[in-house]
Image (tube, rainbow, N blue to C red; front, side, top):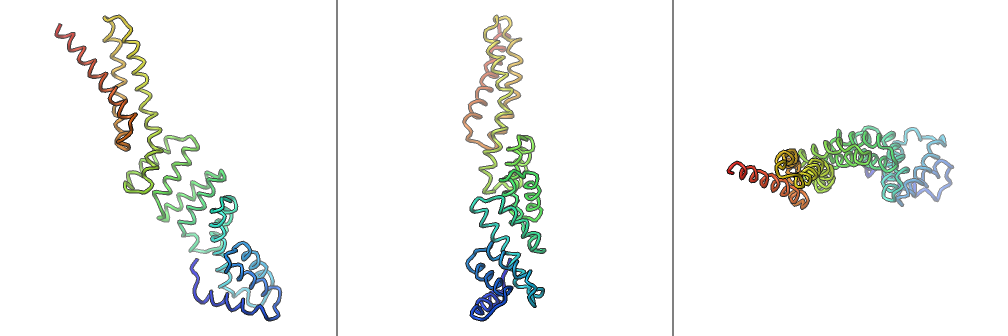
Length: 270
């Protein structure tokens, strides 16, 4: 939350009045101001709450302290998150959104951070909602999509993970998060390509041990599976051109197909 020079002046002014006899409420306000200056936001919040409940004259009109109070929940949440206390961070981010007015509700960064904390405490439904809110607010859209894909990955929903990553890469081809997106995407893609490839290999092995007269009939379904695998490996290489396994397996597919076609041609010539 933005702090005006007037707010900072008011903090300094109230702290300077320590030497006077203060009521409990005003002392709590000053203690809160001092804690705020020292970046002890949780203590500041606690003291200001005492001040707000004190019934002191002027509390209702003290907009400056109320703004600092609301903003301190965001500051405290950030500190909790840095210390990996994700539950406290999540709670304080939510409180900031509750108290911070339109500025807090339109804060896409806070929505993303709250989503990250929610994911760390197994509140994945809340995390997905918060990441989507951050996207809707236009904040770090590609990063949020990566976080969403990570949640789907953890949940074992590879289809949604893949769809999210493909959309993110298409929309943000120059994203700094692209290497992470590709690394996550390649796993299910290779798994999908490996299915027909492995079947093809097994069929080819059986065909190689069958009587020569039955070789073509036995090898034909293997070739069909190799052909099915080719575009899948090519898709992997579209996103990860240096993927050694995809390059190797694609070469095996093409080599088997070429050898089979040469063999059939030799039979015709005979």
